[in-house]
Amino acid sequence: MHRIKGALLVDYGEPIRIAELTVEEPGPGEVLVEIRASGVCRTDWHAVTGHLPLPVPLVLGHEGAGIVKDIGSGVQRVKPGDHVVLSWIPNCGNCRWCILGRPELCDVAITAAVNGTLPSGVPRLFWGDDPISCFSSTGTLADLAVVSELSAIVIPDYLPFDQAALLGCAVQTGVGAAFRSPLAAGDTVLVIGAGGVGLNIIQGAQIRGAAHIIAVDPSEVSRRLAEQFGAHTTINPLDEDPLLAILDLTDGLGVDVAFEAVGQGSLIALAFNATRPGGTTVAVGVPTPNESITLNAFAFPSQEKTLTGSWYGGSYPLRDVPRLIALWESGQLQIEPLIQRRYSLLDCPQAFDDLQAGRGGRSVITW
Ligand SMILES: [Zn+2]
Ligand SMILES: [Zn+2]
Image (tube, rainbow, N blue to C red; front, side):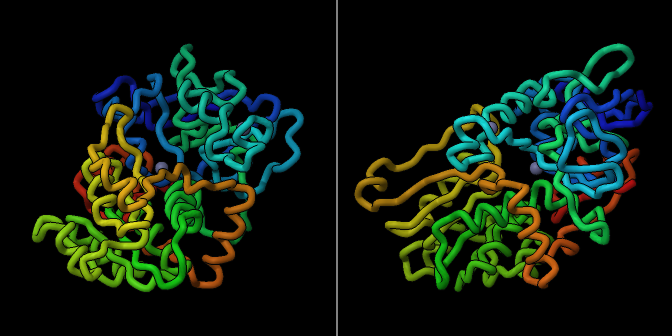
């Protein structure tokens, strides 16, 4: 049993507390990780507001990196002392979706995430005597986390934890969405929302050879970052009608591939309307579960457009994290400039306020 501090959501809409918690030793197939860095992602905020109704009390955070302190029985892939990035989808390898090559849809991992538990279902986190939930089988905004062995992806010891943590969500989600889209070299690409995920879609699109990348974001800081990450043109939707501006930039046709990285029905519709006939729109941002989209039905048959989604970038972390690290080390992928602000765990509530204020880039909590 270890005494720790963690960012706890006691109930929806309440302020985030930095609470004294206890964490038990890892069980079979589980790993105890000392968290060294954790990003602050908008999906955590959806849990805080209750729009993503996860069981509370809940320890927040799902974008972490740290050091393995202890392992439970039967763990083979990691050992104490290993540096790891945490995957928030500990895909089981055995369910229908894992076998079909869609590990991001793993039944076991999604069920555990919805229930706020580890895949084993056994609680390891306690507030007083009461078992509590963790965000997406991780709960990285805490000093220590017990996670499934399947969540712990070993990385080289020399990588800085604050940057490595971002591989856990924003980088895999964004770059993966671009890599697994039908984007071909020479294509024109639209990215709506240039936050942590959107910036990674932009750099993924650049690596895939996009000829023209258009980014839409109301924040000046985010537009500047979008240019730094490879956007050729940026649009402020508060200054001009974004659809007219995009059509104007593409000879009235629309873009080949459009990505929505905010998670709003109206913006997914904008991305679809800005996609050329025969093109593809990819919804990447996580909307609240009741959000709907209104689209012109005639556009589907008459223009043969495709609207699809991307969850966790379609990533298989054991395969993809090493590839992303290779791209990072070769200089094709930037991670450091994503980090716009660093905080201690005690200042975590401020990090969420800054996320809400649209201050741009990623906030990272470091230990
Ligand atoms: Zn995330
Ligand atoms: Zn599975």
